Image (cartoon, rainbow, N blue to C red; front, side, top):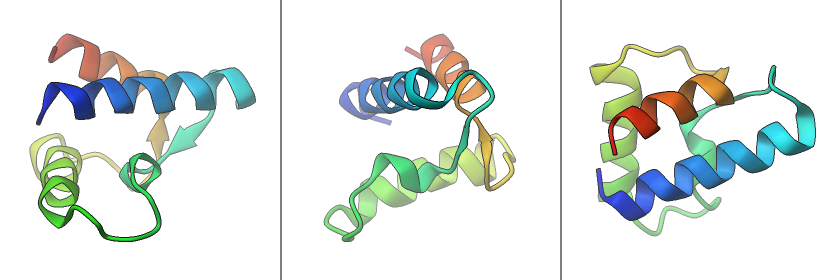
Length: 72
């Protein structure tokens, strides 16, 4: 996954946590616009989320942030 995408994921997690607290959950769709303008990147993130890490549809933002930070 590109470093820029990893940073975007961290930024989105930070914003969600700041707005709704440490218990907020999100799905990998939270990192993309409502239009499918980069299907390859969407599939890469979906594969990381679903196939590689076997995560549920919704996961805690703090967990996702931590996982991405460990992968930088």
